[in-house]
Image 1 (cartoon, rainbow, N blue to C red):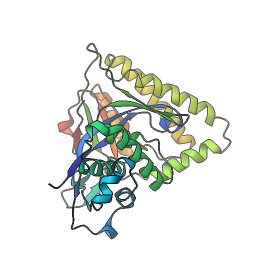
Image 2: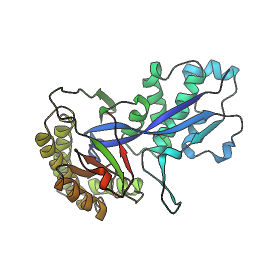
Image 3: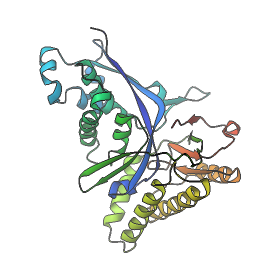
Image 4: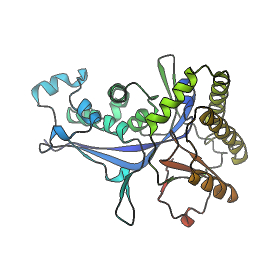
Length: 307
């Protein structure tokens, strides 16, 4: 039997940040940077990350018989494509959802090793990976990052009333196919801290919190239905509204969503007929560029998105 290996894409949230935590709709895409997870007899389990440690031996009913006959696999992870090395040799994590990719990769590896293909069992793999990832993360997060890594396709994602709804993106032949690129902000984001601040704000009794949250959810839903289906001007109008509402929520929750580089790239992109916005929790990590922009002018690392 050969060595089993799987490649898991990164993820990016185009819109729906924070809203998706409370029933809003997010639009998420896989990123063509890959975490490679490989079966290995030479790994040291004591050096596993918390997610890999949890996923390596989590009981999976569908492959239990196989894994009773065969010992559980050692797991080796290659993170190279999820990091950036600058000219000085400094290595920085890019913020592409590595922990979600770890959970998906470890579970998918075990399925593939047992003869159950990832393609045919993506829903099961997503469910197990989300349970594992959520447990390690202390219950925070929407599950959108795990779903993107597991299904490996663009989607609309909504988590409402304990139910996860995943819809495949429908493309319109009349829509403007805008180039999408990610730019590394140069700053790692503390997602847990910012999500904690957001949740604390919602519980704080701020009389404007509920109103702003409803506005954010509506703006997220409105723009979600326009991605890849509308002309540029209509998409940009609703994208601007979502970003403005997101910034208002972040300011109210004392979240450092916008760094100087966000403002710099937003001005640059708009000057060239496009848009730039924070992704995920903001405050660092990746910045999304939307439109036919001269990205070759930028001095920052750029990742073109495929869709």
